[in-house]
Length: 210
Image 1 (cartoon, helix red, strand yellow):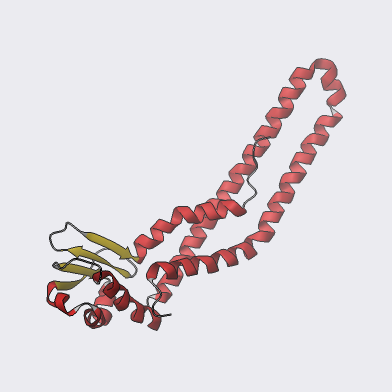
Image 2 (cartoon, rainbow, N blue to C red; image 1 turned 60 degrees about the vertical axis):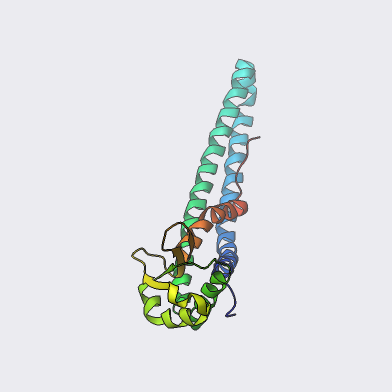
């Protein structure tokens, strides 16, 4: 497991959370779907009762009212579903942050981070670089990071504590500030948020027109 990169680790956490979410949401979503069906059936029944009278008065008005009520009901259902999507997305992101915070305290992370940094440096041009880590990682992992980078770069690398909250991972920037790699866990996490929302929407019974 020590060779797994940080992005794959977050993907692994997400798959685990999705599985948990599907199980937890199944009952709630079924209740919503049942409520939706009952509401639509009630509307249909109400209009069937009034159908003869309505058609006698004005069939066109009857049809327009029926469509308007159905459209309003579907809009309310969609609104509730999208609220559930937002809430589920927020819950997943919070759960993901919690798992990342646990992960950065693990032996696996301490073994992974220096090797991941070294992998990046094996692909970079020779230059003077700053490596930004959390303050805790600078204190605990600085020597491990330096031990894994190419020997010809060791004297050209400065390891610094970043003043922004990156949760973990690292940022590499050349000292001329013309090149930057952001492999911080916060940035990886933020890049997943839109995808999480899309995944959640797939399992919600969004009511379409028609």
